[in-house]
Image (tube, rainbow, N blue to C red):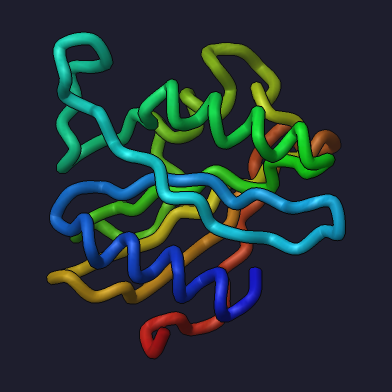
Length: 149
């Protein structure tokens, strides 16, 4: 995760606060990553009982369009991104459940999950989570200080 990519994620997280932000990190054919913000539609009658303040549901049409365009260009999905307003960067039980799709293995093998903490409108932490087959669990990597990004 480059500083430029983290800047884009942090800017989006700040712009949606106090709602959770969400989006995708997509790699192009050359392996260069970019952040694609996706609208959080949590709380709409068709998506979930959670609200944008305590959950995220990515707009499915936007996700499909971003993934299709990336696939057509020979790219791939690198990470799924969302923020936690005022509660810290951690992989919640709900985050884990969504990543596993209710099963025992990730829905998106090899894809990382980036969780960004936003407190009082300022990004103060970010952590990556990646499934480790030998542990049958997600491992956490704390990213360098991003409070200045």
